[in-house]
Image 1: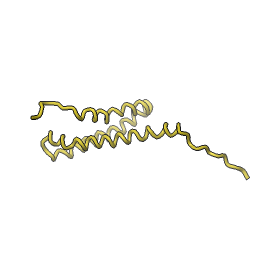
Image 2: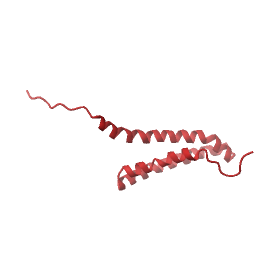
Image 3: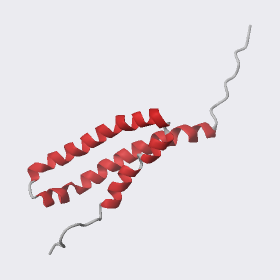
Image 4: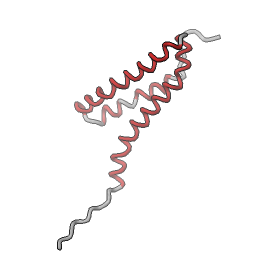
Length: 107
């Protein structure tokens, strides 16, 4: 009878190498959707027409849909780290631009 070699359990280093790069983009995508959903009433009020609300949602979905394969192609060209870190700016920019106010002050 031959014994099969024992397989060592994965190390903590492997966990911290694999899980955060997967979890962070998923979290940011969820936060991105939350920011847009929270801002929808204010955007609709600025546009003055609730019928245009669906176009805002569609525009955000199209932007996200186009960004995914674009970042995939950039990852093929430059490696995963640089486009991945560069892709973090989009949700962060939405969070930062949320309180921004342009135009004349409202009375």
